Length: 305
Ligand SMILES: O[C@H]1[C@H](O)[C@@H](O)[C@H](O)[C@@H](O)[C@H]1O
Ligand SMILES: [Fe+2]
Ligand SMILES: [Fe+2]
Image 1 (spheres, rainbow, N blue to C red):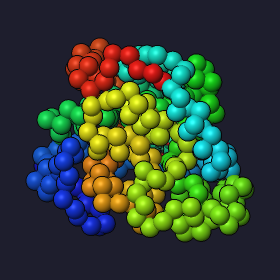
Image 2 (image 1 turned 90 degrees about the horizontal axis):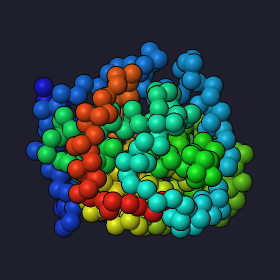
Image 3 (image 1 turned 120 degrees about the horizontal axis):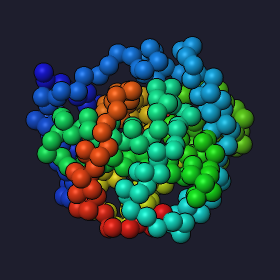
Image 4 (image 1 turned 135 degrees about the horizontal axis):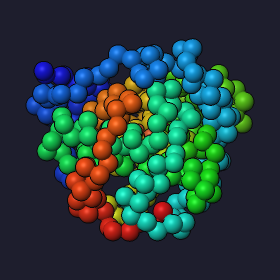
């Protein structure tokens, strides 16, 4: 079966050096992965209004998230957690810590997070056998959820999981449960509530502060511990929860050319991140040696977290 992956309409640019090139040939893949129509609860994926057993908890999560994620809060969290002075451990040790973590923001999954990491990575591996960097990206993209763990101060769910969005400019209507932003202190602040706020057109996502959570934290961990993963991998880790950009096309005016290029890989990745969520278990011991070899290739043995 041949799957053609939708391309963003934001313009096409030459791939630059040190990037993983992506061209039309690579986007035409003989994939085995079939996107299911419904999640394990019998609803379509990312339906935040469906009357599901998860609906109320998820909505409550977004209420807390939207009220508390302010520009000032994010600035303080980036500074504090950017110190990476909490724990020293390997990537695999962190995967194991996620055995205990369940994400309250997710309408499609109530399994421990380690299942989701392996499901994502293995689904990518089947369709892109040669892109080992993308398999590892699948495995580690949600490791930042370790911020929920008591050894990291046990941050509340609203400060770790859920979709992300820029702070310091207007909250776009396409953000899930947008109505709760009315109670956010930045909502009525003229410095932060205009289309560009503290940013400017084409300034590049690297200059934009995103709501604080597992994406930006894991990006900082990977970068500061000097991973050799390509820039597309770091981009995927950092923006995979930025659905309002990669799904709805909001905030695209903030992107620069490099972002446009990296976004193509994020859109490939997203299909596996979202639609591999299921009750199907992966045998951890069977796949562990393969992932340990990738970790060794792209990361130091111990990282600062
Ligand atoms: O609820 C989910 C979950 O927290 C994911 O890890 C995140 O990447 C998604 O954006 C979010 O919708
Ligand atoms: Fe995530
Ligand atoms: Fe994920």
